[in-house]
Image (cartoon, each protein chain N blue to C red):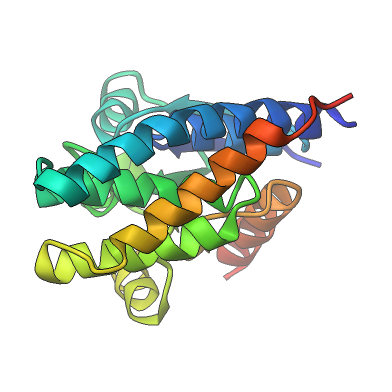
Length: 100
Length: 130
């Protein structure tokens, strides 16, 4: 494994760890609408940019779609799909054997 | 190969780290990294940084990429420094809009970490040869 690959793996694990917090925020948003449109946009924008980088293109695409909706209407019907995709990634990561 | 000095501006720590690692694959790239447009402008204005190329995230809090570009164009030393935007929203219309602001290229996020340095070198070659 090259130095870049090894650093990317460490960052991927950090992304997964943070995905749990992101999911919690999105769930709260879906249930109570607690976030401002701008905060929601910032969160999904970050996901759109970083998920693809760490090997989760589906999350990146869904997050971009949510971002587009939020820009246009302040909300998104695709939010449950994004939450489901995050749940799946977190679930798979928790069953993945450690590298090496 | 001559050293290419890049100023890279991005508020997202993970992406910043990956981009830095990617640029380190080219030993002849010197990269200065800051986490906001405000810090970039301060460095360019007060510390007289002189990058060959500026790599600029689009969506950042406080001062976003387009505002950073407009501000640095008011600095005589950077009126023509090539700026490359990096964005997760690089679809047709948005890309055209960003190029219309004066960027020389738009790199979509997620970018390819193995090729970012090569891509920036190629962009720099093209815009300095013109």
